[in-house]
Amino acid sequence: MIELLSFINYLIQLYVYIILASVILSWLMAFGVVNPYNRFVSALAQAFAAVTEPLLRPIRNALPDFGGIDFSPLVLLLGCFFVQSVVIPNIAKMFL
Image (tube, rainbow, N blue to C red):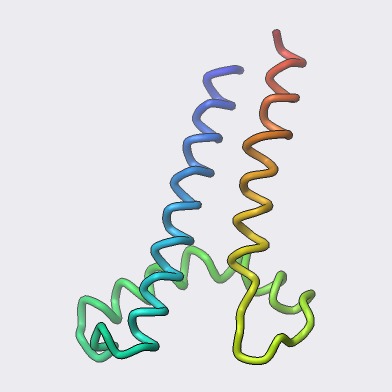
């Protein structure tokens, strides 16, 4: 069971990297550093959106409007860190 929790922790860490990459790519596209009409960039942005949007959309609906600033990735990252540092270690303690 500990191996399964370790694997879940690894997947959450991978998801954190995907969230960060998605945020950075969206910034680069917004500031004109990267051409959003490039096939590779648009495919990468669509792939990141397909992976992150199912969890970001409910958070966006729950948060109030902050103008042009999107805090939903930050909330999702905090949730991932909470699961990694509190939930998974406590579940692991139950099986030791």
